[in-house]
Length: 128
Image (cartoon, rainbow, N blue to C red):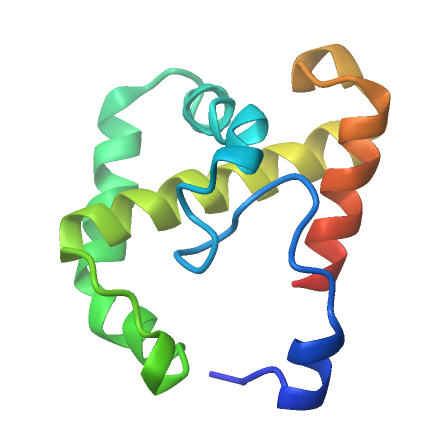
């Protein structure tokens, strides 16, 4: 995987509204959006828990490759199962957000976020 150059990493915004991946996971100031991730994951898989389990299993199959995408000193120090769940929630969140914002008809009510939070999330996702 690609690594963000240090010069960009040092000058970049550290995230205004959400944590994607393990770096900022669990920070109290990012909980508003974090609390929506499980809801978005369920909406993304149409509340089909079997589909969600299959997606997580596929992530677990690739978890070693996922870990290799991180800079050595920042590699996630969490269990494979928890990392896979985090990646599932983050991935579903991103895809559902894009579907709602970029889709044919913008459905901001489905996002359950205020307008300024939607904008901050978009800005944070752009930094990815």
